[in-house]
Image (cartoon, rainbow, N blue to C red; front, side, top):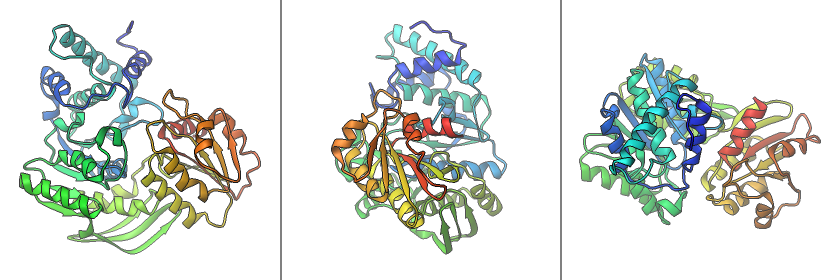
Length: 426
């Protein structure tokens, strides 16, 4: 491929040609380790809080980063996937890196990869995720970041991010997702996620299935590190509404929390993040103010009013259950419209079966992505008395014309669809 190494659009096109998150994915640390060694091991230059799990890991990373930044640290945040632009994945001091800096760093990593490939040092060009992970480590060093909230991609043990030796490891709830890569059982998936637990690094665990918690604690015991359970912290005087929560977090410390992230599950995510921040000796005022200022776009994000339009990347059954509970609890007396699109590698029928009964009207569409499931294929999987099909998100939005000012519209099923909606509506 012809490549203008200084061009952001061209660097993004090349990254996409590498297959995004899953196509041509090859789990393992060899290529990433080789690239980093040839760049002077930039991941040794900063501290990390490494976060794995199935659901909530992005929210937990966002909260931790916000609180540490409020405490005065120069922070980094590495998350995936992005909603609109790949620059969202690598943030410094609360902002995505600039496109020109992203492109220049891509050029550095790409040139090195091509050289190592031509010398036979690596077997193939690093994947999309491997490339952007190496870029992140390089940028965090060059921009003198103090501490990074680092989200794993897939799994943990063989995930490209697992080259770091973190200051703290955090494991959010583990559930079924990406079974084709991580295993068909919860135990198999948990074993992969537990791979981020390392000697010398304390562990924080979010709420887990009993068998998963035992497995995580066994791994921690094996490497000789302490575990702090999420259950050591409780939410007292809890008040939850459609737009966030307020509570006192009580455990080894006590904090008064106002969380702007919507959804009852964000109370649990906040407690997990608080346990991590407390373990890092973060000042109380930074924890409280950092959580109040935390933002995590595309997750129960209110983008329009009258009617309310809410974006939520509920892309697996556990996420769908959380969204369905939210709709039933806070929108039960209102007419609910659901715009749903999904990717082929997800449990589409299961997620749709959970979500569709919570809606009065369902509009099926497809994200503008080669791995998207056709809307007609979803229609064959799940029934609903008021089901519509739209060829694109734009057409789906036009079908909302009959919606009243008091209705609620949820756009969900895929983060790619949420990203499209965010670009159109915000």
